[in-house]
Amino acid sequence: GGDVILRYRVELDPTSNFDSPIVEDFECPSNNLRTIWRIDTTVDAGGKIDGGSFTLRLDVNGYAFTTSEIAYDAVALSWNETAQEQNLPVAFSLVDGSSSITTVPPTNIESILFAGDRVKFSGQLAPYKNYKILSVSGNSAT
Figure 1 (cartoon, rainbow, N blue to C red):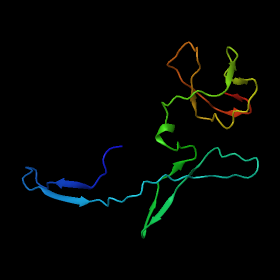
Figure 2 (cartoon, helix red, strand yellow):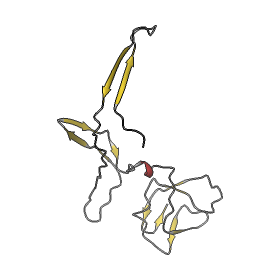
Figure 3 (cartoon, one colour):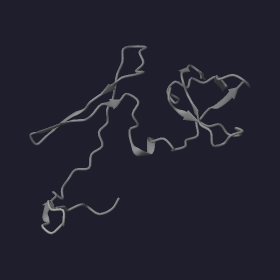
Figure 4 (cartoon, helix red, strand yellow):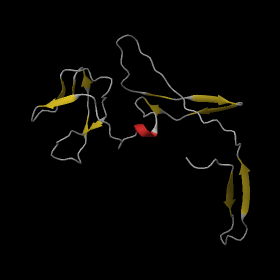
């Protein structure tokens, strides 16, 4: 949102009394392309990506930029960030004293719940508490 940025100003003063300001305005091109890049990963049959990182190199108009390391499980967009709540399309069952949850009826959750996710359950005694998923296999998670 907001207005298009047309220029920015850099101001500095090399003196301790701030009596010799240096000011320069930089004009920005107004035809910047707003771009969303999609990164797809593939694995061998039956494989699973469960660690590591990668970098991206962008080459534009003779300039090259390489990103810093990006975690394999980095969120795609700001709406994917933590503190966003989403209801999962499955029901879970928990046995008192157990750290494992299972889906009812049995439903494979490996594509919707991941190690490192934080979850809450409706009706939990401490509604402010988040539980961190350690592993997911088939229809159960710990």
